[in-house]
Structure formats: C-alpha cells, structure tokens
Image (spheres, rainbow over the protein chains, first blue to last red):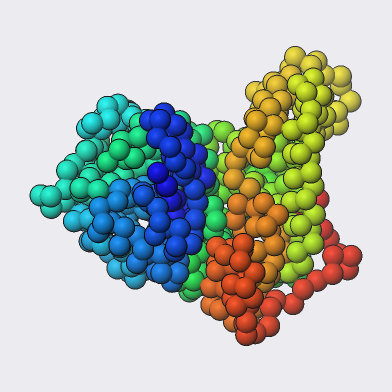
Length: 194
Length: 327
C-alpha cells in the first residue's frame, strides 16, 4: 500500500512517521512517503493532506496541479484524510475567512467548515476526545477549524460542544485536530483500513 | 464548552504550532498592506514589526517592541498567524504581546536586549516562542527555557546569507558530533552549555552555593540535567527536538532554497521582501523556491526577472553585529 502525504507545506514528516507505524501495526506491506509529484500522488493508494496553513497549501496544490490528482483519487474511492488545514481543503463550503483570502477548496466533502473556529494560538488546546469507532483520543487543536454542519451522507465521528471535529463521508475523513502530533496510531490505522 | 478539560499552552500545543509552519516562509511586515501582500503570496505567517531589520540597523538607537496598535491592525488584516518580537529578557514586552493575542513571540536579537544576563523563562507563558541561535549550545539553552521553535540568527538586515549558512552548518556539525558521543561525554557537553547561566551569580562578589537557584527557580544542577535530556533527545532524533528555521540575511529565492538544502525546516525573510524593488514578486518567488528547493530548475524559473534584490551589506563593514546579542 502506497500512502502519499502531500508535502507542499506543513507537518508532513509527522504524518509519514505515524502512517508508517500504523502500516506496521496492521501488518500491511507498504510505505508512507512525502511527495509533491503529481505522478506519485496519482499512483498512491491513499492520500493524506497534513496540517499547516490552508491558504499556503491551497495555492500550491492548485498551482502545481496536485489538486486535480487528489480529486481523481477521491472519485475513485481511495481513502483520503485531511487534518486541520487538510480538512479545510476537503470541504465544499468555506467561511468568510476562506472567501476573503480567496482560498480554493477541493470541494470533496459535503461539510461547512469554519477556519480558526476556536480562536488564535493562545486559545489552542489539547483534550481527551471521544471519537466514534476509535474511543478516547488525546486530540491536539492548533488554531483549529471546526465543521459547522454536514449533509446527511456525512457521518459525524466526534463533537466538541456544538462543533463537529471529526467526520467521514465514504472514503473521505476530515479532522479538525492533529492525530499526527501524538504517538497514538489508532486514527491512522482506521484510515488505512477505510 | 467544558473549559476544565481543555489544556492550553502545553508543549505539544506550542511545538505543534511551530510544526504547522514547516516548509513555509514567514515574512517581516510593518503594516496591514504589507501583511496582505505576504498572505496573498503564500506566507505561512507574518512577523509584525515597527521597522524591518535593515531600517532598524540604519536608524540605530534602541529598538523595542512594535506599537501594539500596529500589531493589532496587522492581526485584523490577515487570517494567517501573526508573530511579533520582544527584546531579549523583556518579560513585560512578552506579557504585553501575549495579552494582545499574537500567535508566537520572537525573543529577538534584532531588538536591543533588555536583560544582560538572561532570556525569558518561556515555560511560564501560554504563547509559544521562537528564539535565534548561532550554535547548538544557544539552541539547547533556548529549548530548555521553553522555546518551541529555533531559528538561525544569521545577520539580520544585511541581505547577506553567509551568517545564516555559518550558523546552520555549525549546528548541523555539532549535532553530528553529539550523535557519536556516549552518555558521559554528552553530560560534559551539557555542563559546558549550562555555564552561560552562571554569568549573574559570578558577577556578584559573594560566593554562591551550587544548591541555590541561579536562574528563576532552577539550580545549576537542574539546568545541566535539563540540557542533558535535550541533548540525548537530539542524539535519538538526529536533529533538534523543535522546528528549526533559517533567518538573518536571506534575500533571494536561491538563498531560501540553499537554507532548505542545508536542513532548515522553513525560512524567515526579513528585509529581503519589502526592501526589494518588487515585493509581491519576491514574496511569491521565495515561497515557490522553499516548496521546490529540491528542483533547481523551478528555483531558476522563480528567480527570473524579479528586479533588484535588497541591497546587501558586507559583514566586515558592519558597525554592529546583532548575532552576538543574547547567547
């Protein structure tokens, strides 16, 4: 199994490391790797969009035509996970910040996302979160977005107050937090088996 | 929301913020308009300043924290993180910046130091800090004090990349050396690195007891053990345990790509953008070069027809080196 972590910007190595550990734990032969090459994204069996700055990542994946490859893979049913900024890019509907910065989204998931929903870095936090199908998970939120609402075809996996912070639409997984910053491989394992 | 369950300002949250900046360019800006140019070009964050380093250097005198009103204008203008600089050891400037809600504080040698002995104990803050370093020793001390991110000091405001390269090479070489050492040798290095904290105690002509606190609530023994743990982690990881950016003299896309090639996790560009003849073009080109540093043809393409880069300065002709501040 080839797992491509889109490496234009953000915490790429963290995803590569934890995805490789998850593959090993599951006994799946394969490799996670960082890439910005269209051809490598095309050939991957699963794709991860890391955390980072959504404005920056969006500009670069559309400029280098990586966005098209991700969309194709999504339509073919390959698992795709976006954490934080990556989750923003998966959304179909953005907020006023996304409109103001003219950030292009991949528009793959029927979700409404709000950037920096919890506030600035000062308001960033970690919390033990209850996630459906996973259980209790130490979730790290950094200038995190939140999902305000979803269509009926999207399964809500975790909520924090009124905000949705993890959800799945078929082969697509959007998270507002960063499982890659911890040593807990369970979310990546779940993703690889999606 | 159940606020009691939320934990703010933990190491994971602070270092995590820095990790989100990786592979990106952080640009110095002095007003809202420049901040918007930076965001539009793809900067991952902006550093809000009163003057860019080249102008600070030219103006001489004491350089201090920027006007909070200016910082707030910049925070209101962009959606990406906003950082700001405080003077080395100036706990109150740092507290003021934290209260404004800036996303990261740069305890920076570009401003005039406020404390001749110590840096801020950054563990006591919720906001994450970045600090400059010329060597592994400086980096270890800043990390021990709680810095969530390190950057090379380079020589700010010169547009001359040599000092940034020097500091990155010195750090890389020292890390290689650490990786080859056994625990007792590493402990000796830690002792050596901890000596800088004795400056105050040794400046007083009264002998001090090794069991007494010499910096905040820490004894020299605590400091040695703390730095020893950081060095062992460096050996295990084969790199710094926090994100390490390049800064101080980066003026062109090729400069930025060079620093990435030498192992930087990302790049700060100070005067290089808004002292060039075409800031939006330079900003975009540097972002592109940092993303594509492995591909020289893209770096070449990005460098085409940008106009004049900022005017550089020869290091030996400087009246003052900023990098020797705060070691």
